Length: 365
Image: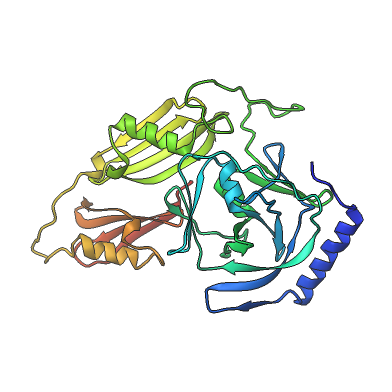
């Protein structure tokens, strides 16, 4: 457990920060490198509880990485969160991209707690030029009001807002102002909700190789691919996330092949058992476009370009598929784009290029 300072002192410090925020004395300035210099507060007195266990975060060099409060939002170190998710965290300097993926190949960092740390004002950077990619999906971070938020850089560590951390881990987030405790917890998922405590039965199946007793998302994806008789290079993943179904923790995995076949899997997150799967080829049959009496079709490339023009920031690598089809006797192109964890589906008139319909939803829905 951490050494805690007098709670009255902490409340005074919090009040001073709040006053500074209200009066605008916590200012920021822009520099030429896509970074916004901001005044924030290092908050070692905050307690972070994840699934019932108090957590202390360490940088790769073993030094303790404390929570940071900026503009009323708590930020946590991303690399240490990657450890909790059982994933590798990679930094690409050339593209300024943090990638979280795969099954973690090294043990969590064992550091030395910083017992003498105190709450203090610090200077950090908000980095709107950093890109966060999780399991191949570029993340668009927003606050509770839907406003875009960006990663923070402090002492060489990348931090993300608490709400975004909760979304990446699939956990709910709560805050206790009396004890200054942040709690990230999984949905209970139990048939019985009136009890003093809850235990989840562990299974010793060989697939249970993640730190929390469940298989990793990469295991789930590989399990689905093996069942479908496909390799990762043959498909585009649309969804691979953890959820609860009838009190059981599962992975939902969805992908498309290059010839427009759709696969949906539900996989037990603890045993790796395939609970259900769906294979849909009927709606993805390809009919070669040609000309008719009304003129020439615009072609797949043009349809793709029209759809991409509607999704700011997306490029060709985000296109899941483009296919020609008929709907009510009308020739059209169907285009699906996956970008920033959102799935955009378009129906485009094959003759005129007019967007007939558009549907957008989160890949987690």
